[in-house]
Image (cartoon, rainbow, N blue to C red):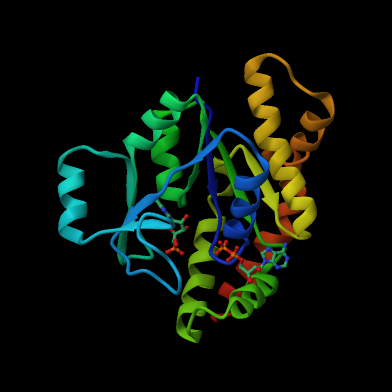
Length: 226
Ligand code: ADP
Ligand code: 5GP
């Protein structure tokens, strides 16, 4: 049985940082490389971060029913997960990790209801803004657009099984590892109590109170008309 883990986050929350760490620390995990029509950024390479294809090629793959899910992200480009990554993970006896947006996560949950979904949040809006700036990849206009997009995406938090507030990186890594490993162990029938306890601290129903101030920090700015 393949366990499917879905990770989503508003841009700048630290998802890539966390994913690149757990890809090294959690064994038996396959990472799905998405297809996208956006252009490569910086040092990105075709077939490593993404498969970069044209819109026509993407539409052809849709017609051929090659996608487990796909979506238009940031109102501009197509992004999609090829079904073959799920088949490949099954074949290799590994679990599959998907780094996809909220639209894609909803589609995967429909097709694979037992998939485990994790939403990563920044500690608040100003920290997210700071991280987007410190990353130094986006223009001011893009940063503002990503913050606005983050406000919308964050409202979907309650569709996820786990919420990880990425405040201190080392603690977030431990919590994410605990979620993946404890879910895996639970499904294999040999749960580890300590790991399960740590994972449970990120369960949606256990973090609701902590989320309110984070959501509020985004709503206040929106209400202020910025
Ligand atoms: P995402 O993939 O969600 O868009 P990144 O992983 O690129 O985000 O992280 C955005 C920026 O925030 C990067 O400069 C990264 O080094 C930094 N960052 C990630 N996690 C933390 C954290 N817990 N504390 C402080 N900075 C962080
Ligand atoms: P970026 O362009 O910054 O790499 O990614 C933008 C957004 O697209 C991120 O939220 C990322 O999770 C999402 N994304 C990446 N691949 C896929 C995919 O295959 N499907 C969907 N639905 N979203 C994706």
